[in-house]
Amino acid sequence: MIKEFKAPAPERLPEAFECSWKSPSNIALVKYWGKKEEQIPANPSISFTLDHCATTTLLRCTRKEGRGVAFDLLFEGQPKPSFKPKIEKFLERILPYMPFLEDYHLEIDTSNSFPHSSGIASSASGMSALALCLMSLEKALNAGMSDEYFSKKASFLARLGSGSACRSVEGPVVSWGAHANIDGSSDLYGTVFKESIHEFFLGYQDTILLVDKGEKQVSSTVGHGLMHGHAYAPARFDQAHHNLAALLDVMKRGDRDAFTAIVESEALTLHAMMMSSNPYFILMKPNTLEIINRVWAYREKNDSGLCFTLDAGANVHLLYPEVEKEAVTRFIEAELVDFCQQGQYICDRVGKGAEQLS
Image (cartoon, rainbow, N blue to C red; front, side):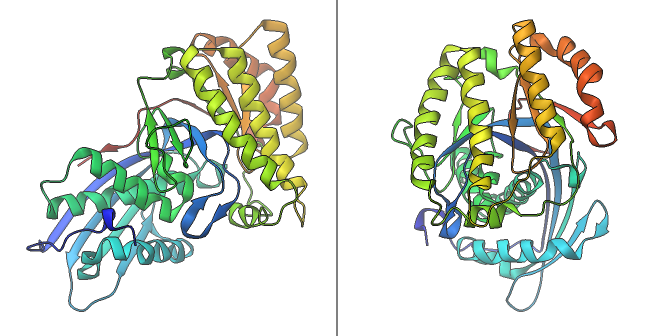
């Protein structure tokens, strides 16, 4: 139990409560791969908060008789039984920090602005949106709560549902995990960077090329677990600490080319860890590699800031300065769209974090 985050007993409980939050996904620049118990990362990470790719969640709370967690879940207006076990586990994890939830029946109505199967981190946006809704309920019971505490605890709770969700509460750049060079960094919640990031990076675009929208043959949860006892894990964890420190310096200076080198290396290292685990697996597809090679050729020919990163899947995130938006879009349409499933891609950009809708 982290005592800082245990909610005080409310003087009274309202009969009903309703709120809605919209929370974005994020794309990690320095990856976390491997975790300990209680959703603690094996190494620190840092991400761009996205803008358009987001989950909107409406939470309705009604007083009930008896104790115990009770909820109904709708996804895009329809019951989604396959999502319920993960939400149930999340609510059980956070109950010690929000014991008043046992007094309510929760109705959770959630939807994404992007296809659920598109490989975008829907667990990050979904769990952060739900955590923010629950924090709005807690704030209604504790009107003196500061905005700083609200965001910190929302990030803390979101982490217990999905590790990377703690980086989706705020923006534009958020780290997660204790790091010697970051004051106030923690394994328990995200740390936000606003003033210390060069404005050049705050306008970055993220176009997600949907190479494969099917279910991955190995889930991220299983992949994280395979880092236990991985022959190269200690060196990888040290590398992540080094790369995060270097990337922060690069992003303060606005160094485009150094940014590209670190971000692409991190993406390929993530997949190298998958290919060298036991058992080993490959999540990239032939079209993933074709896109990467064409990005490299385009960058060399055009002196471009275009670079790529990958999550734990086959899809490719293209990151590039806002000034190159038109040129990169032409390049995608001319050379890359044929490598996307059904020619689909999503245009996004760096965002500012979650927003309350009601």
